[in-house]
Length: 351
Image 1 (cartoon, one colour):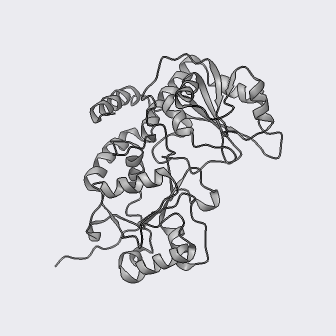
Image 2 (tube, helix red, strand yellow):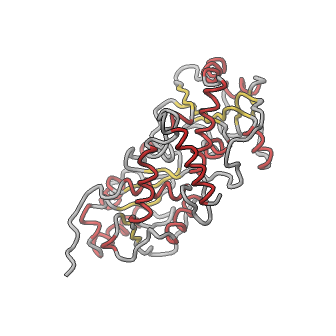
Image 3 (tube, helix red, strand yellow):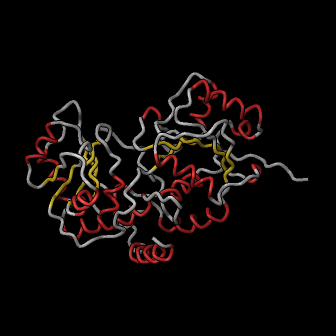
């Protein structure tokens, strides 16, 4: 999508939604876009040199790192940096990571000024709390960028960030005229094998994909379904990016509050998704109760508004080889920008 096309779309959306703040996918639409422009002009990141070539376990991690290095946010002058990036490979052991942090502590003045609070790192699975002093400081103080979902024991809300899952780059960029023939769609692996999945297979209102399919078929499944079901903590939720982009409103089945949703500092997830609670100790979710929740969201006017907001939010889930305005890379950077100067310190005086 071109910058002009995206700007026109955002202008149209904002002119429609700003008079009614409840009809926006954004937490703060009046500040997001001017803040984004300020970020582009001023935000600077210094990255330490990795001791060896980096190897990441997922494509979003690799895309983020390569995009960061090519971006105008990088500065070679650490005195101008707002944040510092600590690079290490996905397979780095705790002992090796401890040595990396010890090296930063001994060789540079920046870590000790804030004990790492103005530093960030990428770890798809997230770091656990560890007895190693250096790794513990990194975990407690620095911003962790991990993959969604991340174990709740390895994710610190309000500090850490998750990367949007990789979405199909060829997904439609706006609502289509496809008829929504199915109430819900469940992709292979999105909901674990259970009594719920068995009931869904037998219900004619739900489309259950029995196995992997080609992308065209998958796209049609999304476009012809009102809702896409995901089970947080048990099933595969990576398809949530494709769901929002195709206007298949995500239905997230969960037994606890979710604090690691992608772009949580940007999007009002309660406006673009449906969250269904369930208790593992009971009978779980029954199809009839699930359908009652979905039908309450299915009134023509209400559903179309949720779907429209969903598609708009989906524009921010796109990972590009060459970053584009407001895409996934820039939204992760924006969340880092919101965390700059967590701890303020006196800058050196220049003689």
